[in-house]
Length: 281
Ligand SMILES: O=C(O)CCC(=O)C(=O)O
Image (cartoon, rainbow, N blue to C red; front, side, top):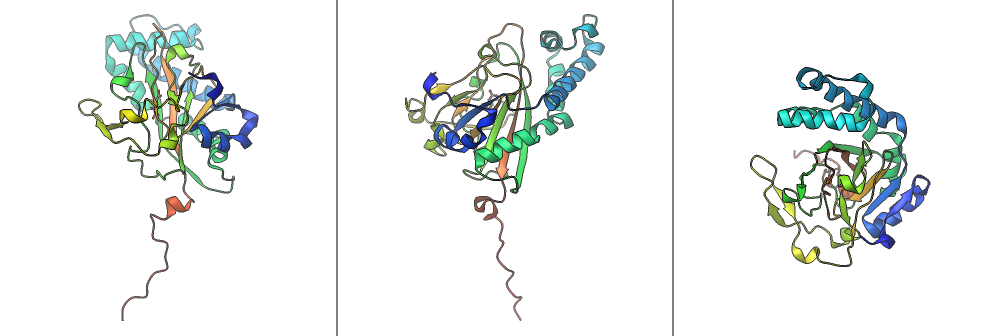
């Protein structure tokens, strides 16, 4: 973890995002997101967990606890221990909440992404692959998803150099909860995920990185405490992995999405925009 390479900017630094990202492959923008859409997502996640806790929880539901994320985590962990399918319900449904889409499509994120892509507000950007991740304590995803890049995951909108990923915490995510870990500058290695990696039965095949790209001291590992309102933007060739949630009784709640510069020549060249040839007589 090299402090001097920490790619951290503040909300007012949008004009520096593209150059920083070009150098580092990952940028953390501190405190750049507005509260209302974040609070709307938090409220809906409470609603989902409350909904099943009221029906299936062992304890009495106490509405006075609402707002204290430790109470939310406690309810989810209790439900999960009783039956892992309760967590699956929250996981499967939360990514489709309109509040999640509204946050991931909010003007502040779009402005940050456009700044990172070096394009203006007149240029269309498409968003897909919106996900809510719920990482329970002690879960080490690196067994299933080790160091990787995002480009190989068959995203239909992916264009080399014109697609970016975002990562943000819904509730505070200090290093103890295992925020994502990035290899700073590793995007410069290009598309190097060539080793197929099984994530287990009935799961998507993952792609991981040959060792020669991982030991490179030119790419120091970087991870930092992230707070509600912070946004991480990274290239789809930046090498990264999940941190480990080492907290005993806390859940790591995060959102991810992928953004694409769909007016770029790299994207449009896959469509044949040439004039129609006259039909043969
Ligand atoms: O959330 C994490 O820890 C890692 C996320 C990740 O690997 C991804 O979004 O590609």
